Amino acid sequence: MRTQIQTDINQLVEEWIDSGLLNKGDIFVIGCSTSEVAGEHIGTHGSEEIAAIIYQALFHLKQETGVQLAFQGCEHINRALVIETETFHQLPYLEEVTVVPHPKAGGSMASYAYKQMRNPVVVEKIQAQAGIDVGDTMIGMHIKHVAIPLRMKQKSIGNAHVTAASSRPKLIGGERAHYPEK
Image (tube, rainbow, N blue to C red; front, side):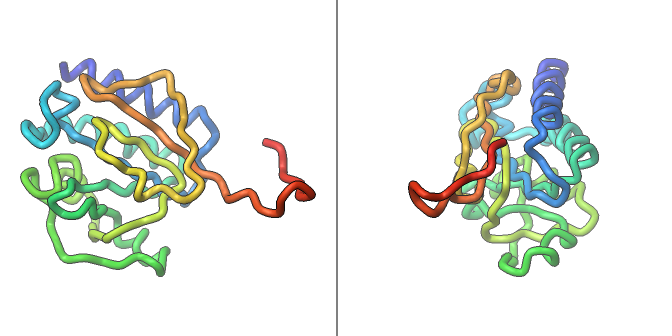
């Protein structure tokens, strides 16, 4: 199972790198149920071993693209996010909250990320330019408007369903307006 998880997340990360959608400094939010990855019901069999595999691949994404990672905790901490203090200071709208995620309140992924970061801080909400949702953890509340669902080739990590989203600025101006082509 470990090899399959590693293969799946590495393929997904390479798709993101190749997509050209991520820019240096973008916030990339991750919602992840390690229970779902293991084939269990969300919140029942969290695994920091699985979290470690996923974190390592996402850290590679950060190194290759320059994105800032934000790990969403579970509903027991109101889906608060773990980020680096450096990211916190770059975004003045963020509000810090006091909690340390652990596997039973925050989830194994957020807990593991908190332990790996140099100087972690937990914030209540964020507006990310892109992200992935592993195991249907509902990251939509943390994606900037206008969210754009992406159809990635890699649709699962282990046994967990994966969705991905990017964002774009709102189109304004009506029928006479012109928009850049991409």
